[in-house]
Image 1 (cartoon, rainbow, N blue to C red):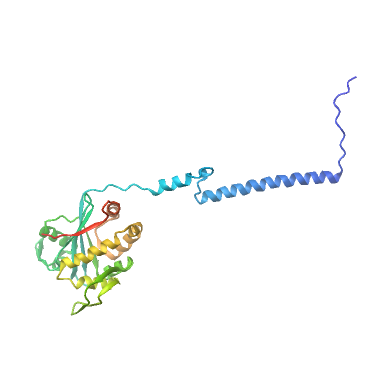
Image 2 (cartoon, one colour):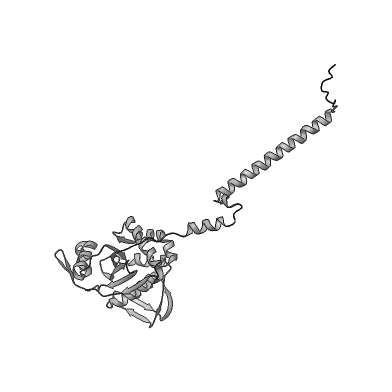
Length: 284
């Protein structure tokens, strides 16, 4: 006679059944809560670009940071020449003029001052820089200076009185030391500048340059000091913002694409072994 498998009899009270169900529900809810919290943390870390692969590898973040922050410096060669001029707000009176030559093969910038009273000729006009502007505008002046100085000018930048002042103010002023107090008062200029080390505003900087309108070499020296102060990694990191400000405050034929190439050139100069070297040269 087969007896078969016999299962022990279990007598559960209704209270015990409810208790067991409650415990199972609590355990299931706890697991769900832990899983949800874990996913939330991972999503949050991912949102803030946390490197999940670095978990368990303490050197991963360090390697990633080094790899992303080291950027190759573009190789820039050749030479470009830029005409820099500043004029009055309401006329073509020229306050200063210079040709900035960027020699990227030798990592050198050279400022060639041009006398504002120099007589130059182009397209049937012979006269001063102001007269060239009166006759045919900036391109007329570019051609006249190219003819006189036997140099090819690639681009020009023209600022007016107020534009120049605002540019200097936008970059934090100009730090310099004035050897001797200046007191100039005439029909075209009033410049009272104390001696000593100081940070000049845009207005004072332009007056300081204009004091030496009959001394182009001194003007070029002041402008070269200004370039040396502003051609630094700090200003380069904010180059796009400064470009926008300068474009709005000047008249130029430098396009956005030209500016991208200029940025590469500045970056190469800043990372060259000698740093940014600025010289003052003569023109023919």
